[in-house]
Amino acid sequence: MTPNSIALSESAPEIAPPNLNGRSEAIAEISRKWLAGIDPSQFRACHEYLLAVRLARHMTKTDVVTASMLNGDPASGVSLPTISKIESGTYGEPGFRTMIRLARGYGISVSSLERFFV
Image 1: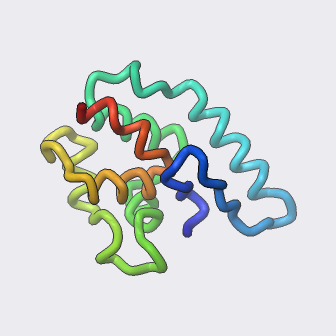
Image 2 (image 1 turned 180 degrees about the horizontal axis):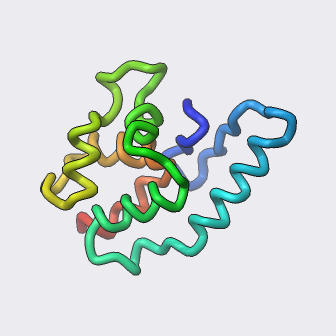
């Protein structure tokens, strides 16, 4: 898992990134505070929500692509063109597998994406 990814289930424990003299915990705490104000219900579409999450975490699209991969395998993640299309609203409705990969890449739970695809 990458530092930006979280468990896909609300009940599963989050795996913390390696401790870099306390800096990783401070960064994680700042990230949680930024994300606390981002409520999926404030957004009309999934692409607006995902863009807000990425910007709140100060991530690039490449960061999302890297975080979506399992063990560095590009086939297990979301591609950069897909991220660009999703954030611009031109992708359409992603499938379940893509939603799981997006959740992993953006470091959010799958349940936070559910409301957009009901």
